[in-house]
Length: 203
Image (cartoon, rainbow, N blue to C red; front, side):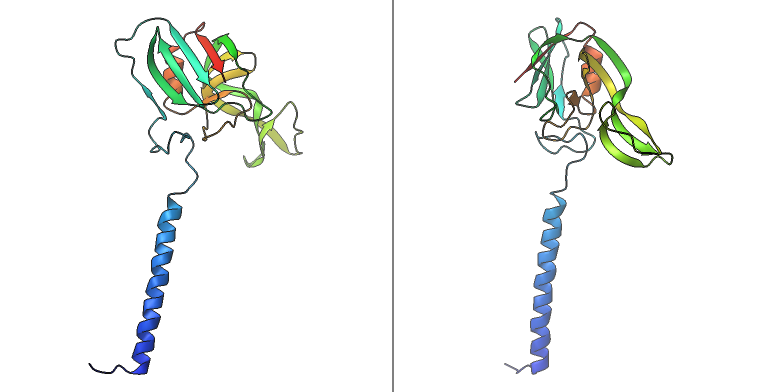
């Protein structure tokens, strides 16, 4: 076996060390890229592809009066026609201090393009958010800003100040009391629940 010069051995060892470091960094990059915070409307039931709704809907052939059941503990809502389950979705209910009240309600009114008059952001004249996620009834408005109400598409009010609506659904309770439904499922619930539909909110 031919003897290698000392410099060649050092280069070989250093190159091996560099390759190990590069491999470690590449592995860390791949692992970390899978740990990103979920896109809005991804849920605790799993990280769904961006375009996929976080739930399921199939009402073909189903009949009967509609009914919605929301389970706070599960962070899920179920839609029935008669006794047949035709759809379910992950939801985000009221966070601590803003809990969604359990009880038996009905859909009182609907607004497909609702904008909140209480919750939203304080923004400046250039549209920059100065204070986010505020309650305009309680949080003072910084000088030079105006209130920008939160968009709540497909809103179905079931109690004064409480609605089911499309919104950001993290894998935990995060709202000010409303029941947020992910994009793609909110429209299904809205379309199939006329005013008067029973809504049961349970722990």
